[in-house]
Length: 366
Image (cartoon, rainbow, N blue to C red; front, side):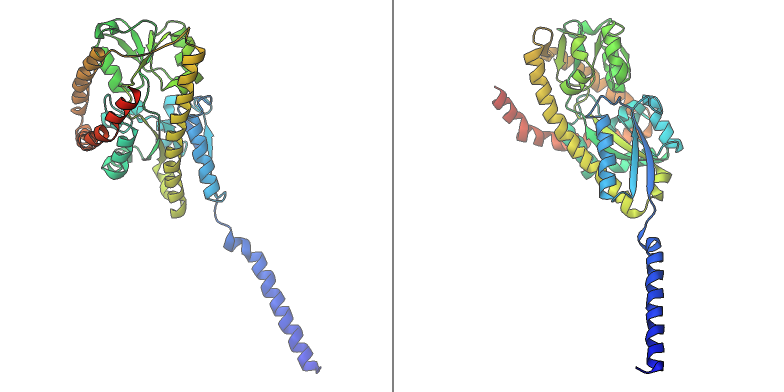
């Protein structure tokens, strides 16, 4: 081999090695992408695996589907803030997101309550359909833009029970003088019209309030979550149906600036994760409530009576609910707009619900 040929091969080999080394050094800058770390607070104690647990599941889905690029640290109520402080904290950007029930924020704008539930409203399928197929999402985003928030529907925690009562309810007059814990602002106004005193008590405090007699009755969610709080140890009469929370929805809401700063693929990851957790939550709730109800009837039948509210009581509650919903819907232009959209959609899907399910369920249970 000539001297010139050796020199060419050596030079070429050195160049290739230098290029390869440069590629190895620069590879992390090409492949690596910025990682995002968020904080999200819930309005629920950690013991509630279906509610607080849904936020933990959201974080897990986001981290897995983003290959670790996007991590959300989840905090329960009381860890970094109290239950009802999370909305304002996310609005200010103190945290990037929260999970709660929209009904908690009705004092900010009455229209917000419709995105959670209204008395004698749609079932979970109807509320979800209004959100995805109707005007629900668009209207909710319009309202939350004022608060620098981006809302996403969380898992439903409905249908629910009507609640735990220390004494039997046989007529609407039996509500008079009672102190009742209700989550929904609209439902609180309904039982107030019936003669009760209504209060909003955080989940973690319901057991102690009912056990000590600070309140006479309390509605929370359904058999599984209620038993998690120990409510079956506090009052004997467990009433259904949950007229006040027929289609109750949670929300995952995010600080707008933080949301819009996400790369497009991570925004879509977050959106689809919320939708996935909504499905997981609905099925989880359905199965666990069935198991809990069976346990209540078998293991606590000497202490707990699971009974339906008398039909005349339900009729009276519905009349009062119509009055309250109409009054609240007239408080702001946005409430009127949202109520009109919700009512129109309920009128659309109601007949289908009746044809598709009502007669069947009556036959099967008969």
